[in-house]
Amino acid sequence: MSSGKVSDKALSEASYVVGVDVGGTFTDLFVLDERDGSARIVKVPSTRGEEARGFMNGVARVADSAGQIATIVHGTTVGTNALLERKVARTGIITTRGFRDVLEMRRRDRPQTWGLRGSFEPIVPRDLRLEVDERVLADGTVHTPVDIEQVKAQARALLDAGCEAVCVFFINTYANPANEQAAVAAVRSVWPNPHVTAASEVLPEIREFERCSTATLNASLQPVVGSYLERLEGDLRTQGFGGELLIVQSNGGVMSRQTACDVPVRTALSGPAAGVIACAAIARAAGFPDVITGDMGGTSFDVSLVAKGEAVAVAVADGVAVPAGVAVVAPSPDPEITVT
Image 1 (cartoon, rainbow, N blue to C red):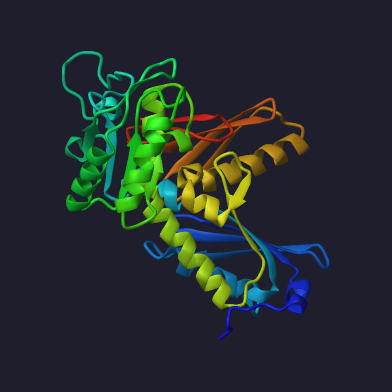
Image 2 (tube, rainbow, N blue to C red):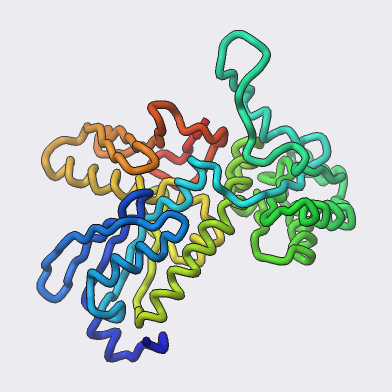
């Protein structure tokens, strides 16, 4: 087994660029050999719950050693499937007093026109949405400074309730994040792991529900996506990989592994987006700027409308909008992904 250290000579001899898409059923690899320009496709079964194993099985089919791979571009549905199936970490919210129900009220959506009852269940239950005294006005004025000791007490209460991750969401932080930044520092001083999300860091924009929902989803995905990517990179390094591991974002671009661990919400449509970007490029090359693409996997069916060469991805499961009850505002072909 390799020690994980890679020599400069080995790096210079690495010639493969590998695109990897880990889906719910299969792991697909596209392998480009930069020495002669040849390409091939490898397909292996995915390992649900241990996606890194299926990934490494695919890598073993690509080359004799991971050290022969120069770059890996990874489109992952780990975050997507966790969202679809609601298999996310137990997460708490610390928010401004009086605003614990922003996540549940949403935009006052009504699944049915008539009646007073709905079927919506927020990703964080009400008993894990705790309030503290603080207030920033819409113009950025600090009306009430945050009570740091109260913040620490609420963080400990969430830990006692079994939370693995926490989101700090204060209103109007797009205008002035000072209170929220102080609260996040206090939470991080008592939280036993790095899974602490500041809403103003993830989405420093107006619209309270969208910011709260996006940041909460980010917090709930951090343990899931982060542990997967850390384990994956560790396995790759052990097998001699010394190249660059890049993660596909929801806009079809790429980011570092560390950024993906810090802001996993950007991987919400990682796998589907990679396919959409490729389909749009192929369609343009074939002379079709307006097309509809379909990507059927083991967990979801992803549809995109490509209009005038621009793609908009919409995640669909069982013929209806993904039943997650969240809105995600993050870099994507369409900057707002509403998942209701």
